[in-house]
Image 1 (spheres, rainbow, N blue to C red):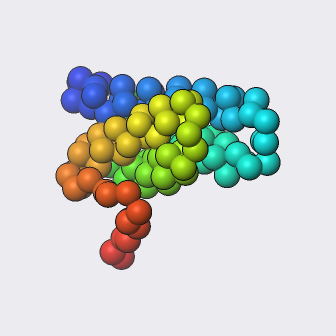
Image 2 (cartoon, rainbow, N blue to C red):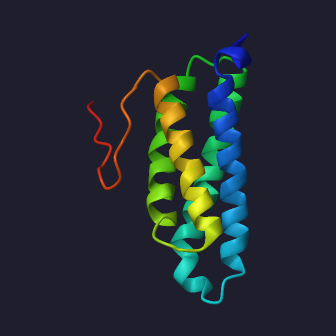
Length: 124
């Protein structure tokens, strides 16, 4: 049941994780790997949280919304970084990250989409 309810978000998370893995591996093959260090680190963080969010949703965890909120923030950061680089793998990753962030926000009940360049301030 949980998988059906969250199917589009789970799919977006899995697609994003795959795109981030591809981007990180591709960045490691770029001429100036040092210049890509931040992109690679964010790709790894993003892929990991996306897989975790998909797993939380798949099992219907009561904490899925919290993990998805964090996932959306990390996806935003990864998208912002990847969009700075013109390589196709970075641009494709940025697109997958934006889609995942939007799906995670919708799943977590946030509904609002973040625009590039804004920060996700959180009320405590």
